[in-house]
Image 1 (cartoon, one colour):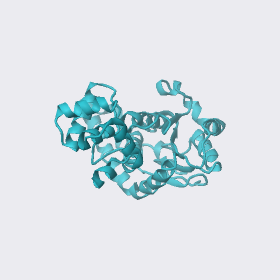
Image 2 (image 1 turned 60 degrees about the vertical axis):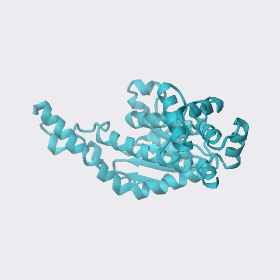
Image 3 (image 1 turned 30 degrees about the horizontal axis):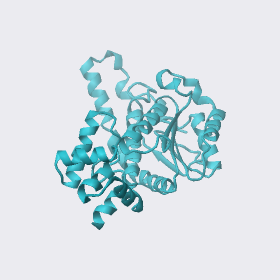
Length: 294
């Protein structure tokens, strides 16, 4: 395997001798390569997304598995799904080698254990309806390979996201490789590789959740009302979709017990709570289907 992420970047060989402005411009120039590189992988990302959607429609789960920065990014993306899209915390899960301690402290040797990767998949009782996405900038983390090997054995859909070319694809149904060249600081994959990974995870989880009906137009109709800002956002969503004033929106939101979709049905069609809830259930919780039929 050609380990691009460990190579020295010729443009930054004299990095410590540059002034701050030059360093910033150099980092920015290197970062500018990321979006065009990801664009080349969009067809592959889309193929993976289609598989995830099929699995999730059958109550499957999505797992991100990674080490160090890659693992933290997976946990970050997974943790944003419940408040943004209203899904259970079990629906999208981030797994990091070394456990919760590795979120705050470096536990770098944790990535070297193939056995621990196997074990975590067994502990999560991964099955054929699940999708496991391994994240490894170098493509060599044994923990990730162990997790994918066990997941594949259990019939789950498997994928790898990497910034290196990978020769051994035995355990991957999908391989997404984004070649970005050497990092500004040699081997520091928290930089370009980390940024690219975050962008790809955003694309995956966001697109999957949109296609599963958690977004109407570009509005988060399943968000959880965790604070005043989100409560006010929910009011604006209801007013916009149901075409009602703030007073009606607030009344319907309170009646719906904080469920935006139910509140929209209540305010737009003058339904009661249980009637609105039943209507959504009959339409597979699809707000779009209800609004189209009325």
